[in-house]
Image (tube, rainbow, N blue to C red; front, side, top):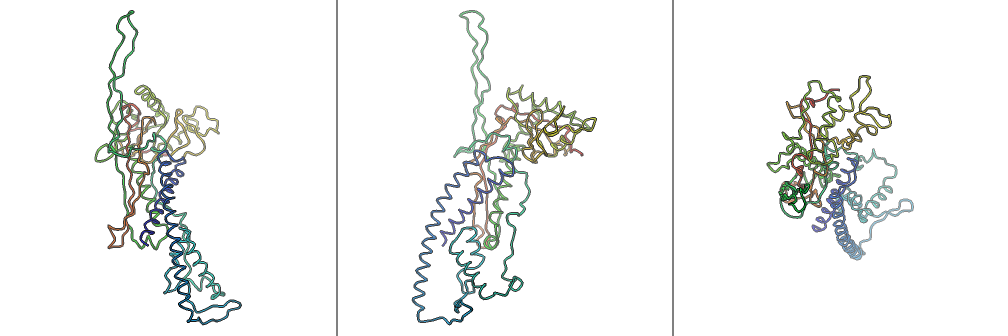
Length: 454
């Protein structure tokens, strides 16, 4: 039934999307964001509606099948099957559950039973098992190698490795994107009112008109697609889920990279690097033989520039994992590490944390600010080998995402003649690091941040 197929496909897509949201949050060691939680609940509500419709259709199908079976039994009363006895069981010459005349196939029923909990498929599988137990008691898997289905460790399948979105999830304010429009408008006061001591009684008090400006943040579209054969989807196991999860992972990585280094042109978001590049809050660390001890004053400078420029408080460091590892590997003149776990009872340490540093939320702090390790941070700056260190105020770095993001489409028509099935994942988002202009954050660049050696 085409309508039932459409409903079950949409229901499976919802399951895959929800699992992708949970898996992403779990991999990054965090809870669902506000946008992700809203999306999860909306998908759950839609799934409940689909489950009710699917159940009603299946109930009708079962009733129709039972009625057809009764009619067939009545029509066949004149054709008594030949019987033969096996022990206490009587086996007739009725066809096996799965043979060339059957309306169902073994793999299809396995999928229907395991994925959709189909009771009819479960009954056929159980009947099939009883048939082979009776007729082939003394045989083993070697005797029926062509009928023994191989077991694949689908849960342990290795997805394509991607950097993910640690910066967006850990060091950005999360908002829900409005339902319409292709820009997000933010009001920013550029000139504030004034207050001063009144020179004499009854003399004029200080007056300065407040001036406001609007920051227009574009809504960007991030999307990806993958066309695979219909045979792979229908005859494979977990193919649809694997493709959609990979597309979601690619989308999240792309969006995170844009928030860090997007150019603000050609459909891209304007990333934090583009906002700070060449501005007052870019700190140059020049060093032919860099050390953590020489970097340390630059870190303090990065904090004070945010405080001085925007009167705000930075909340996170954003670094490439190689930079976090470099800081963690530093030692003093007595070969004592400068970045150590709290359990070591640190003295004069540049950083502290709990156990081994991790990807995403590293578990460590520098100058009291938590360190986020994100492989989307550029490593090709300067002469082509430098990275950057960002001092971020999460309240000044804002991400708006559309409710239900990312969205997934399953398209059969474009490639129907070649039996291709196209899966598309897309999302709408706005990102800005310019709430306070170019002074809400700071960054450190320069030759002192060339590829480290260990």
